[in-house]
Length: 144
Image (cartoon, rainbow, N blue to C red):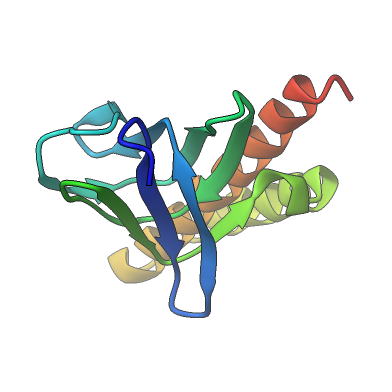
C-alpha cells in the first residue's frame, strides 16, 4: 500500500458498497464536514445524511450518497457504517426527487401526529435530499 493513500470502506447492513485506496475523503458529520487524509488522527464521529466525496490516486473524484451512520478513522483505514449508501452513478435523479417530494407530502400530513412518525419522515427527507444532491453533483462532474 502506498503511504500516501488510505484504505476506505463504506458498509451498509445489506452490502459492502465500496472498498478502495484513496488520497482523501470528505464526509458529512454532525459536527460539520470533515476531510480525512492519510495519517489523520484516529476518530469516531456520527455521520449525517449527505455526500461523501473521494479523491482517488488517479485524480478522479467519486461521490456517494449516505444516510445516517458512523465514521471511524484508524491509522491506515477509514470505515463508514451507514444505514444506506449509493454510488452517485447508480442514482436516478428523477426517482430521488419524486421520493423526496412524496416524503415532503407525508410530512405535511403528519404535522399533528406522533413524534416518532414525524422523525422517520424527516430522516427520509434528508436521505432523499442527499441522494438528489449527489446525483446532481455527479452529473456536473461528468458534464452531463
